Image (cartoon, rainbow, N blue to C red; front, side, top):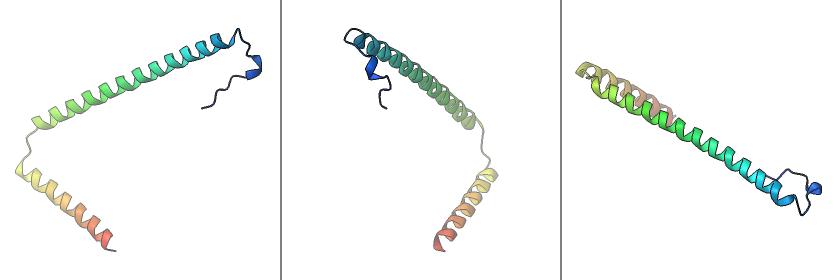
Length: 85
């Protein structure tokens, strides 16, 4: 991204301060974005862990395993049938 501050207003006395202020603002914005992303990932990981825990507590009956396998076989047959055409 290009620097958008007009260059005609820069003098030897105010140039360092303006760039320093811009740098500090950008640094703060980046820090806030990173904190947001980190918090989002922490929540996502926790939701995933909770899902795995709940799935592992639910016993799967042999009938349900058979139904799941049949569904997977149907999906595979559809995929392979489309690939042959």
